[in-house]
Length: 304
Image (cartoon, rainbow, N blue to C red):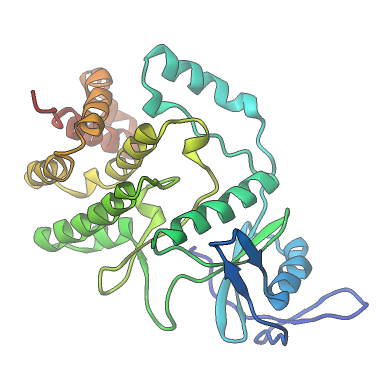
């Protein structure tokens, strides 16, 4: 969500929609969400806005303001052919490592429905996620997750900006605890990379980006292990050689009751340790991150 904020005004009539540079004003009924009954009633003004705006939007995601409420409209992407995922699927089976199996994002209306469903699923168990305001086969309208003037930052950027190790570690630990709470309720995320984890000034954690559902192809244990894999891949390199042993101990402590997950993580590091022996870090920044990541995983040995 790095797009620049802008406001628009929509005027609907029998003629084509007019888009003007001013704040949006709609008058209509209440928005109701009845998750216990499995019924979602979308507020007409949000549904109307979605249906009249999505076809004119050029970006995949763009912010707007409706009656003072900041929202994001996600436009359905082009559909992705299923066969693109076959090589990775075969590779994970060959290695007997389902944690590396690809989670397909088929795009189009499937991705829109998936994201809306996953958001409501996580919202129901108390996870801070964007609220779904309206949806269709071509787009999804969600409320901005920030409250009024509250500033949110991606976890990746927050870690990069914090020079003090203890504060950085505390921030990382807060994200770890938030993920553990989700897993404790027998749930999981979709793409648990640091870029999809938002943190405010009070270190409250929120999550975004749910276009995929790993549980469609993986069992629950592997879905949760995959969450840790994504989180560690996108954060381990934010700690230097002197700091990482402390972070490794933190992860082992937090997962002391999940030896199954520690085993899967360590297995990935052990199986791909050869990449470090051939100098994967020489391939650039991604290679340097991979080296740190694999060393980190290799050190997550399970208890005998």
